[in-house]
Each structure stands twice: as C-alpha cells, then as structure tokens.
Image 1 (cartoon, protein in one colour):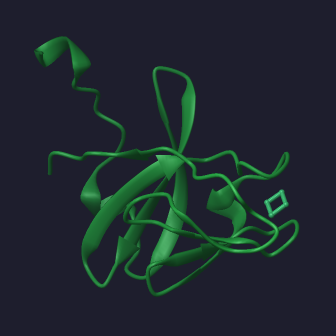
Image 2: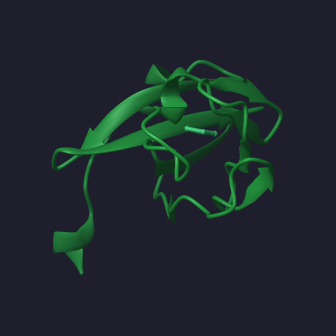
Length: 94
Ligand code: FES
C-alpha cells in the first residue's frame, strides 16, 4: 500500500483557516487548514470549471469562487446550491 502514499505538501505550507492548491501526481487538490486540522479534496468544483483552492474557506465550508456553492471540506459533501454532487475527499497521513 505504500505505493498509494503521495507527498502533496508540508503541513506548514497551509496557513491556518485557509486553503492552498497542491498536486498529487499531477492531479489538482485543494488542501485546507481548519483550526489546525488538515483536509484535502479535489480542487475542481463538481459544478463547473472552478478551482476550490481559489475559493473562500469559512470554518469547514469552502465556497466556490464561481457560483458560490459550498462543500464540506471534511468529506466533500455539497452543502449549498448550485452544487449537487460531492467532490472527492482524501484521507491524509500527517
Ligand atoms: Fe463551483 Fe458553479 S463552478 S459552484
């Protein structure tokens, strides 16, 4: 299973209560720091062509910069319209 482990960034690279863009083998990810807890999801919004890493983090919700739909960064679940489909959330080893 060690082949599935990918280094995406250092925890210190993610400012507290903020989001950054990262990459895992070329796959774009959004990495979040929520009060010191780190989460990662796909960076591409499930509603359109927008990067969640360019959105606005409010607690555990990331607001998409294009149409303001929100996702729960802890599990990728859609929380507010217009998003209906989740984004993939990833398990992180810190
Ligand atoms: Fe993200 Fe529409 S592209 S909410």
